[in-house]
Length: 278
Ligand SMILES: [Zn+2]
Image 1: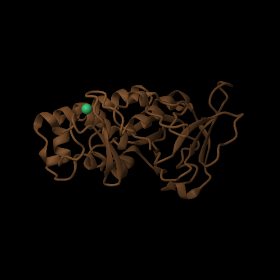
Image 2: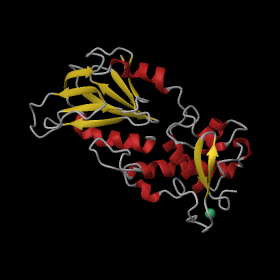
Image 3: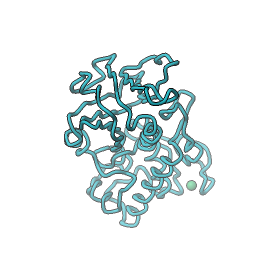
């Protein structure tokens, strides 16, 4: 499932292809993938793309006319650039075609595909509407979270620290991979009650979250299988080589050499080092 670094990598790879391009045609091939108005105008037909935003794991495509399309990739969603030679891949639900008078080599359009359909597209008349209806409820951005932000977000809860980190209204951007990685780097067990963390542990954890999300974004995210995440150019990420615990249950800890433990924590597969994360 794409987490903040994968979504940020999509945003960065998409930007040079779409910023400034005029949408000559926008169509939802599956109406139920679009929440809100699905008219061509609401999907920015006739408009020029001004900016790409990201908030947590969501992308925002803003037109010069002020309209905004919010895209959530869900489990398997992709935003891909399209060229004239390529047929639409299966499960392409929304298509934007660009004018192509300027450069015959440039990208012809943008596709949203989502085989498992846990993702979706929301249309809003303005950025303010998108913020109010989708983004204000999210917690602080994981890439910028301070120790005091994190303390406030966890607010004395007795729940397991990992399950809170996965809640987007507490911290925006973390999913299963980067929650496990952040906890390992901070030396904090995923099973700890959030309200048991000392101030220094809270500071270490906030720093680890920032570092993991920022470096993973700079490495293009993590691609864990052949069918896994790719950016808008169809390229995989490389942060999977830096993962220290995720997917490594039973292997040896890179820090102490002991065996990494694996278990389910509230339905989510979780890997940690019992020695380094007491
Ligand atoms: Zn260890």
